[in-house]
Length: 172
Image 1: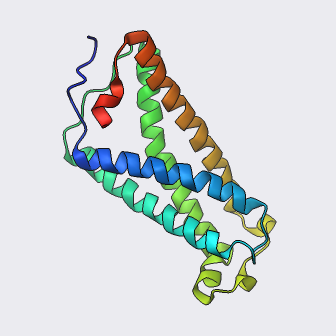
Image 2 (image 1 turned 90 degrees about the vertical axis):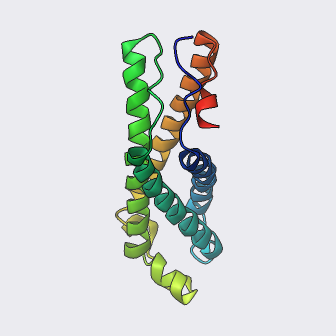
């Protein structure tokens, strides 16, 4: 065996990993659904999207702290220096991208009038999509996140098929 799959992440990291994954896989389609809706139609979805997004932000900050406080398994070795570096790059990029998406989402809430709309329960203060500057980067980073997630899953599957190692054992 090339890697020690008995080494596991901390229980907190494991729980946060899967909970965050589920939340992100909920947030992305929710955001896409809201894109085509009028402000009056999406008030409930905005509340849900904001609550889930803030939860992801908090969980990611906690997981970042756990990343440095707890011993982690060694990085998976694939047999290719390029793939080894790519895997580390993808993992690190997840953290930065999640934090950037959350910050842009909070910026959308503030600058787009969503915060006021949520506090008054009235969509009247929500600005037109094209006038909310952080909305486009927020959506773009979300698509990038999905591409990164696909790369992550492909890497896990490829490693399982090529190296015959179930690397998921480290994070379940």
